[in-house]
Image 1 (cartoon, rainbow, N blue to C red):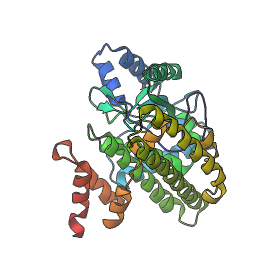
Image 2 (image 1 turned 90 degrees about the vertical axis):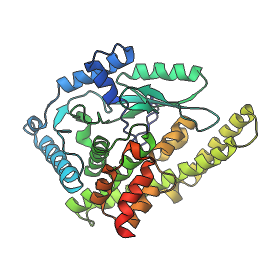
Image 3 (image 1 turned 120 degrees about the vertical axis):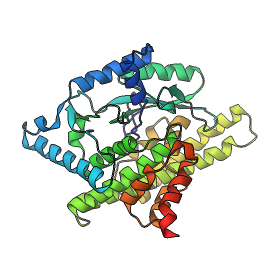
Image 4 (image 1 turned 180 degrees about the vertical axis):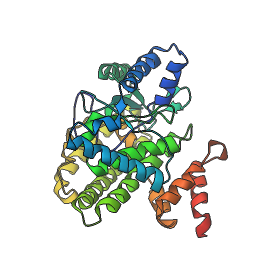
Length: 362
């Protein structure tokens, strides 16, 4: 469901960034003195220190035991059947008193889709900054808004430390459906398998595609294409694609505006008119577009460029990955294997992936 909280959460899509996790934790270990790094790293290390082995959870009750079995099976599927990197990620568990892991700040120019980047060691430039304390995220938002930027703060339920540490599970994940949990874990395990420094859009689009398709294959293989689990996932996925398409239409309309010769104030005024009209259109067309109520809260959100830019970051506008998947035989393990060959030094990662995948189909 869409939520409009003080953080402006938007949990419909994984949006599970690295949030410079590897950087901040590694920096703590080598005594980096940066205030942000030390504070976030200390909190994360505290979570890791109190994590318990996943197996201990299974002795609590049958629901927890089923959660453990599900996680173990998804891990097996991801690593043994899809070919993601073997690791001990998601073999430990942390109890939290909230339903998200961190608050993540993103920002953009208000009159163009120009992302604001933060720079970190190890992972380089990143278009988001994470905080374990929501109040710290709000302070960052205020600081950026004073600079005239559009800002969005969202909650994320996981991130990858890129293999530097053993990523744990968190208590709120026990309530996730098999498809949502599979999507989340495969998405994050992909980050730990393939990460190209300086190519954040490629990294996120790839993880988004493989997480989604991997979850579909997992649910189909474990529950069957006729199961309620699969049918529910398929219906939800269809609605999700329709929502993303609507957002793309809005982005395209605004992008055309930003490229005009209008002055800045005129652009900002027209921007608000376009967003307001889009919200009204969204509400009036809702019944014909969607099969459930998951997206009804969109028109209540304070939509801005930072919010919309997330969709540009996580979802390929040209359907490149889906089309390449079809052309190369719809073989996800082969897709993963090809992705593993992509390197920073060999140039455009998309071209590298396409070459590796299509070589045997020419």
